[in-house]
Image (cartoon, rainbow, N blue to C red; front, side, top):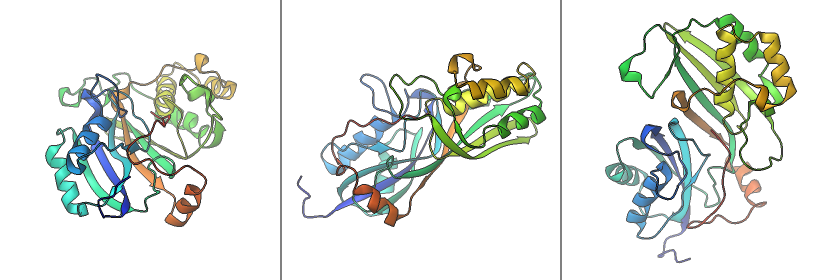
Length: 280
């Protein structure tokens, strides 16, 4: 690969987007995606195709406050200049909020230590037209105490098979560690915030769908415990809709740890990769 006289650098960008008009994060033939929109601007700046690696894939309609993506390329612009250049050419629903230069082996997905998602619910008799495709409107009163009791069963290290939609391929494991699961009620708004070392396909939306069913009084906490322990997605409640979900934050291992981890994987592919990531 030619480096045009400049050393290769890992570029980490933090991305916020409203996912309503996109078919998710991942590039898809014939459909608009966040990844493709950013890659088109990167190609314009560098004059060659550059493949962006996201921390994970978000589905159609899912939003992000703190998605993270990376690519390896010759360092061409300062961080503030690159930030302005990206935002000047991206469609308005996508904003780059930060640019960092890191080691060339930095990988937005492989170096993740934890992620935080937030699900937003408006629990009121009437919906707000200005929140369409931004929150899940639930007109039925929710019993927060019952939801808290069910949420307590999910904190810690567990097998989340019952909360994972079939991703279309065999998983190595469905065990994940949930370090934070908080329900916060402020007026008519309820948020479910979850931090874990990894997420299975639709895991957050499936958890929220189950907690809401508990809160509606349609699923006793003890029955929820049995469904969760049984590990069968087909017996679990329906998933919450995509539009209430937000990727809030991605946390990474420190550099020393990242460098060791990089030794155990193939070199970063700056301009071509076929890796996929399971996520929300």
